[in-house]
Amino acid sequence: MSSNAEIRAAARDALRGQWGMAVLVAFVYMAITAVIGSIPVVKNIGPLLLGGPLAFGLYAYFLHVVRGNRPELGVMFSGFQRFVPTLVLYLLQAIFVFLWMLLLIVPGIIAALRYSMSYFILLENPGLSPLDAINRSKEMMQGHKMQLFLLQLSFIGWALLCVLTLGIGLLWLMPYMQTSMAAFYERLKSA
Image 1 (cartoon, rainbow, N blue to C red):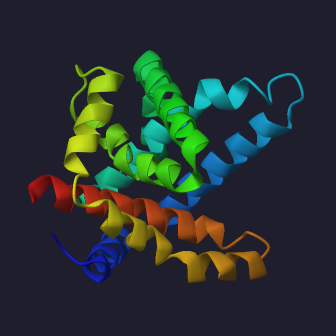
Image 2: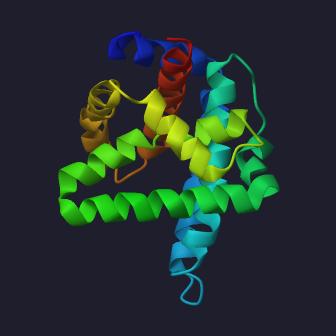
């Protein structure tokens, strides 16, 4: 397995020449989630219904980027073609992480790390059930949760800088983090 520095470098290399579209994807994603969250009638149910398909599309987009493709914005909405499985995956992950969080925060974080590859697995295995994707993610992440945790923690400095830019920096940080996650998945899959 590659080091986190190598994974972040691979993400930066994959994004070279694609930052404009990656920032647009981040902007569209954040705009959609902000609009859904601000409409009084749908702000409670909207994120539940759209969270899975949007997350799936985001994972799909940045996996294409890591693989050297130049995906179009439409890839971001590919989760809606598989609405039910992505919705079920989103709900199952939320329920499982919540249940682990009832014990303490640390078990909840570990559970979130354990299930973190589920969208990638569902993307590459369309016939797989959401629960099977979660189980495969658990198997895949055995012995790798700490590395992923440290990878995500390595972005904290960038996140603090985003606060100084009133959140505008998130438009660049989000693609960098998502591409790093996709690079982590690719290396984990081939390990």
